Amino acid sequence: MPKRTLEEWEEDAMESVPYLASDEKGSNYREATQPVILEDSKIVQPKLEVHKTVKPWVHFLAGGIGGMAGAVVTCPFDLVKTRLQSDIYQNMYKSQAEALMMNTTRPRIVNLTLQAATHFKETVSIIGNVYRQEGFRSLFKGLGPNLVGVIPARSINFFTYGTTKDIYSKAFNNGQEAPWIHLMAAATAGWATATATNPIWMVKTRVQLDKAGKTRTYKNSYDCLKSILRNEGIYGLYRGLSASYLGSVEGILQWLLYEQLKHLIKKRSIEKFGAHDESTMTTTDKIKQWCQRSGGAGLAKFMASIVTYPHEVVRTRLRQSPLENGKVKYTGLVQSFRVIIKEEGLASMYSGLTPHLMRTVPNSIIMFGTWEVVIKLLSDI
Image 1 (spheres, rainbow, N blue to C red):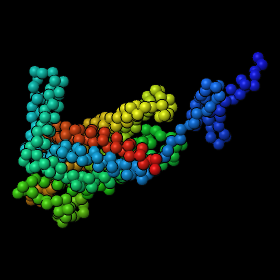
Image 2: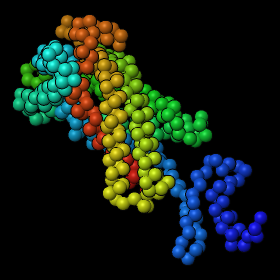
Image 3: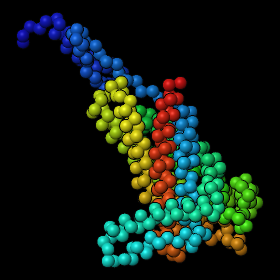
Image 4: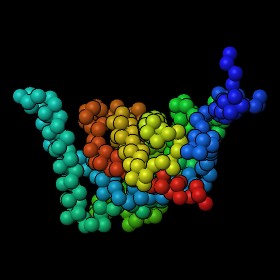
């Protein structure tokens, strides 16, 4: 073995520093970073990035602000979606898109494309009709109870998800995140949010289904709340809760997909800029990465909505006002599925899907984008 100089031994020692660890914590828990050699040949060990733990109240506040921003921008699409889901407005807003699928002379892909274009055109047309017949304010019907519901719902959802994800990862997975940790946290957040906010969504749905003019039933959201309590009791405020629990599957899928997409974006960033080092990123790169994460939230919502949409229709039917003779048509989750499919066909389970996607996809982009910005701002406080 050739004789080594003191300088060579010192250099080897410095290179091995990142891989050393105490007996209390093995080196496999640490990330090794290579030393940087400056021009004067001095070896400087770069600082390891310390990830800040986001405080629960920051998640709570950021989620509420993000939810509010998304709800205001996309409210007209929410109105159209709710009306198309209800059987009250089905004859008024009869879609012509289904007839396109009966044409067997064109390729199926062409029919599907034309059907999607027709749904989009009809959605815009319905918004125009509501504006002309009921006025501009009618486009934002239900926005009051919607905001009253969205702000606490998103606050609770983001707070519960962020908090339980941290708790579950520390309790069951040595502080490390994993898809099954995301699954547990998302399920907990979905069930907590649905239970806490169902009365608000009940009022919002009734107000949006209420026709303007002489046939109007409710003066405002408060009048609707009093009417439900007087005629249906406390139980009436929790109609559709079973469908909301089923609908928490959508939130679970969205969180899982969002976390995976965010992981891929982070991996690409590490490959390009180095591990956890934002100092080498320009402002343009940071904005691009933020847009990618926000777009990932929209894509996750799109995919989750396609899979779980039928529960939206069932939930709306369960929240409808009773028939004129006081008899309730939709009494439960399974019964509602059976009645709707039997009377209207399987396609009706996707009534209002186009305006739903036109609302929820941009809503998720705005909401998650705003959430990340607010967290970034408040984490420095």
